[in-house]
Image 1 (tube, rainbow, N blue to C red):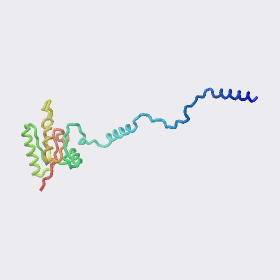
Image 2 (image 1 turned 60 degrees about the vertical axis):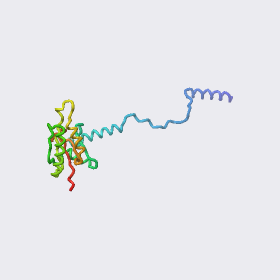
Image 3 (image 1 turned 90 degrees about the horizontal axis):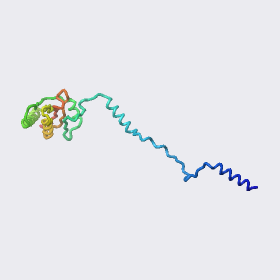
Image 4 (image 1 turned 180 degrees about the vertical axis):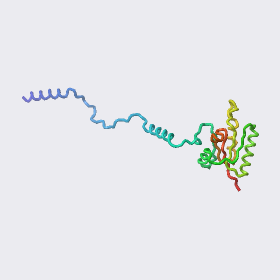
Length: 180
């Protein structure tokens, strides 16, 4: 009689386990789901940049379009350039190089800088033009003025002027104080 019970139990067990599959391991998956591949930090950074651009007043003196000239001698603070670009130093003299040949313009620039230092002027404007009549060559005098002024030890900082003072056709120049 015990055989019939054993046989019935085995048959019932097999019937109950018919849909069960053998597991190859006994480890449960406990990893959290992977985040979506969206670059959330990048999106947040970009939102902050847009917010910063839209907030506050726009200062044309800090915009760069690629046509500006700017130079800061080593040791001079960058905020001096920022103030110069904004026109915050009063212009005490100016030189207009329009219509001059290159050798004449170079000599005139050198004489002007020397005369300004003798008169103890610190901020001056040099008008070099935008090179609109240079056709395909681009602004020749503008590039040379940039190079010449970098070579002059008397020049501390220079930057393209504000639009009201000639824009990219002129530069504000900050000169060293005369040593006594």
